[in-house]
Amino acid sequence: MAEQVISDTTQRAARNAVVRAVAEVLGKVATLAWTVAAARMLPADDFGAVFYALTIMLVLTSLAAWGFDSGLTRRGSAVPESLPRLFRATQVWKSALSVPLLVAAGLLLAGVPAVGSWTVLALMLAAGLPELWSQTIRTAAACRQVSAGVSTALVVQRVATAAAVLAALGAGTGAEGVAAGFLAGTVVGWLAHVLAARRLDVRQPLRELERADLAAAVRETVLVGVSGLVLMLLFRVDVLILGHLEGAGSVAVYTVAYRLLETVLFVTYAINAAVLPVLSATRSRETRLLGCERAIAVGGFVYLPFVAVSLTEGRDVIDLLFGATYAASAAPVLAWLAPAAMLLALASFSDSLLHVLGRHRALLASSSAALGVNVALNLILIPVLGATGAALATTLSYLVQAVVVLGFLQRVGERPRVLSPLLSSGAASVVLVALLVLLHLPVLVELVAGAVVYLGAWLLLVRRFAPEQQQVLVGLVRRRGVAA
Image (cartoon, rainbow, N blue to C red):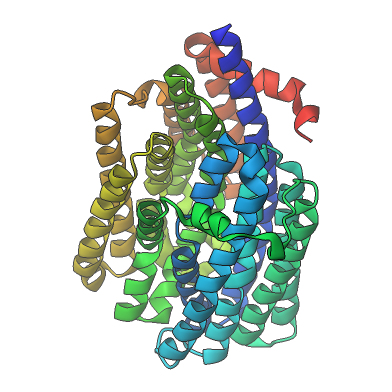
């Protein structure tokens, strides 16, 4: 009976993860498309200024988001009938915090050299509010374990953004047009999320909201909120420091490599969004550990070959997408950034276990340690190595976070296995590296051949050493219609 519960839980989480992942893939393709176009059509300083302003917005909205969505996930999953009131209260809190914060930041940061045009900064900051609202709708959908509607809305947002930005670039409106297109796409995406929310049964009139609802939404969010802000700074502080020390041109080089990294990080977010509600709803230690280990295995399936390709074909991939302007300078940045994807996934899945266990102080301690290492290394390495130093600092800081959070889990007796879920994908990635080193063909041909060889090697290894992973995949394919 227990095995059946674990199987059903794993399959449900896996189906939701795939729905989210497919949407993220489509969205990432759209985002990469307009990023590539902007890199090719804008001067390096303008390109860097756009993404410097975007980074500022993401950090500030992380502060405004606080720990509200995490609290909504935990309480809304455990007590489904409380979700409508918690959802509305979360929206109120995030709006009340974000509006003055974004306005003040726009006034204070105007004129900063790396920001460039104040118009670019203002438009990017304005996009923060609808994005915060959309995030809460996605959180509510995760609580209901219904991903199709919000996943479609996310695709609509990314495609609309790409279309608006590409139109602005075609019209020759420069960095200001790119920022305006980003804002327009974010607003369209929020409207699509609002339509999707109608199917989630979370309607709660604002006039019926009570103080108790607001208090419940903010309860126990301080440590989670601080931890979330620290995590966002850990993810983005390198760009802030790089822009301050080296200027928008270095930010442009770093952004090229960073965008490739971000393109694959959807796997971590999709899995976490699907697994965290399931972990929150179970009291079984066995189920929690199994869910985390399966998440690590899926992460390794994507991220280890990504590391292999980045190390062997990074320069050619950058040249293919972004052009020769960035190929030489961004290739070493990508090489040092690539391992951060696997380390971030490992830290994120382990963080989810700590969150479910209510170990918020441990979450804050692990992310704070990593942030401290990141800031220190950035200040030391960027003046010497530039954007490459920022990449090295990022990867080492995620290594620190993963080690610290796994140490905390071991202390409470719930540390998941790390190496065994990665054995098959790790060995298959070694085969991939050997193939890519031996081949001397156009990069697209090499990547297609590498994908086929990697997948074949992985399947052989999984069937021999980890058949349960294959069972989950087969069950997922057979039941794919249920998730839709």
